[in-house]
Figure 1 (cartoon, rainbow, N blue to C red):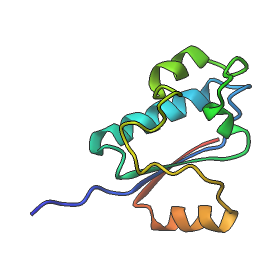
Figure 2 (figure 1 turned 135 degrees about the vertical axis):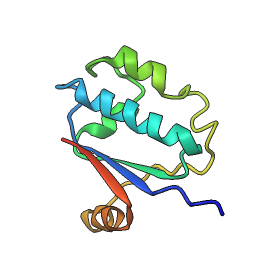
Figure 3 (figure 1 turned 30 degrees about the vertical axis):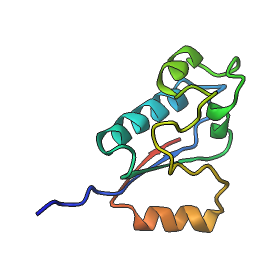
Length: 107
């Protein structure tokens, strides 16, 4: 019998223009998701963390590391077509945390 992968939620609240921890958190999250093609992981970017996905990463601490780990911006989500990028409400964040088997919070 195949056991389902545990659902993992990664919440990144760190400002990527002020700390290297935001890039490191995203790198860790992407590494965790690579085990099962991202099907068992959700990543929520709060506060200024969505700047990790901006086209201009010049103000981001450790942007060169970020560039190594994100897919090519010209072909976003080429390996996982079911990736969804959308704003979430505090209630949706709470529901995501409740439904996850484990959560990692970087703040």
